[in-house]
Length: 230
Image (cartoon, rainbow, N blue to C red):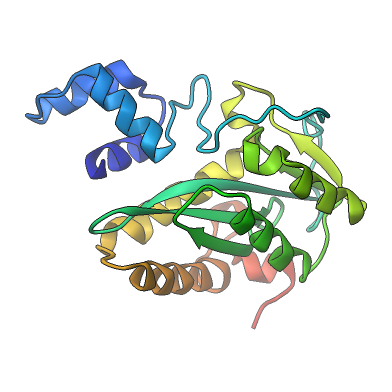
């Protein structure tokens, strides 16, 4: 699972067959059935057709993707969220984050050892305590399509946007965030406990928001662009 996590971050377009071939090249006698089972446990799917960790929901009401062709020109215009897998020395956790698209500022994040909706709602509440977007974009995972999640957004008067099924790049800014989190923090620190993971990620997100210059932001930090420079 550790190898699969690293290789997925390098080549998120690899499906089960390619992952199986790659592991065999590393000297591991695995078959596609085992690789498929492990990827499902980790919540990973190839970017084509779909990279989402969360299982697809089946809501009664559906929402369109509102961002196609939309120019993002200000903070709090569009926020988005997603979930990723965080490995421990023994076991793993799930990380959710809420991101402002324009500034790349991480408004809130939470860890959980399950994929229940609760930790996603906690992150949402943490983000809403700092502001409110015009549009909130998510994939069609069961956590984000749940009645509790969509109801909270509608109560705040926020427009809901859902990625198109099979459209890997509809939430590209969060995918880029996960790549940075993995290579710049998680893979450099071998978390042994949940507390280690929390402390490491807390340190990293502070660095990411307030100290790490982004080329796409003319080498400003997300906090400077979002208006929270210390």
